[in-house]
Image (tube, rainbow, N blue to C red; front, side, top):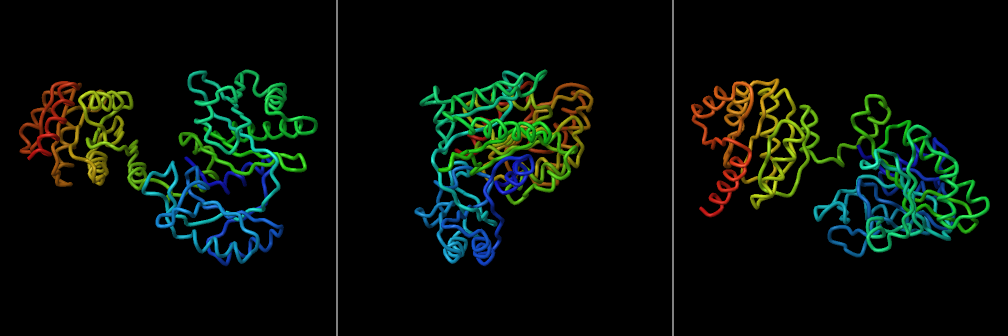
Length: 399
């Protein structure tokens, strides 16, 4: 689960992270009032969407206007808010469709000397929490790693020891910090690490972490993501969820306990089991087409679940065919077949459908599919299923 910048800063502030003063605005008048209360020579007005690259982004219809504005008066803050609220912001991470800006974060400006990069994440290969830093702050860290990898510094946290103080000091030295800055940085790292572990976070990213003109450190931006499987332990975090920032299909899938991720392809996949789903997607690619989604219906493929899955699949206008690939272990194949048949009739399937079943009572399940009267193509194995759905989709395009 992702949260907004202002929410991440509020959480991190509670752990001792140094962040600028600021408040959320939902209207131009609120933005003006917040800027007035903050005072100072410069105020920053930031679009709040779940995507990076806001400053370099643009609003649809106005390519010169980004999602982060420096203003020098409360009236200018009001004007900036008027130009941003309700508009669609496009960044590298949103795709061309962009995201509508429904709220802003109005924040006190600061005098910046240097910009650094700081993050904490989980390295799946090492199976450890890792701290990543760089002197190339304010930039896309993937580009920095690819073009100048020597600028990336990491510290791997031993789970039996936790964060050790020398690691923070070593990273501070690599970032060119000195004097009291080393102590401030160590406190900042400790605050971030404590927040990461206590809140079951999967990412904390501060880009940029700035060194101010007076030598202090300040988190100028903040991004946080959390392990959704651990949210039952953190009800206060669940309340931070902004459903307006989520794919409506993914939101609908979560209501039925389905794991769904929309992709860019044309073949809708309905599979039970994450490993089988990944294999199905891979073999579709091998056949020369691309999957439209990842969809795992889990072990209990009830009629309600399968109907919901079909509705979600077909709500994607890019879907030109559907591949059902189910292994019936605990769940019987004949029950799955009944659910598929009912779901197809309920939703009025109008694209090619290939069904491959394997496992408990597979013969009975396949017989039900064959006798259903559905225009469904039966497959014997995964390779057969992939080749048949690709052929059916291509034949339909050609007709």
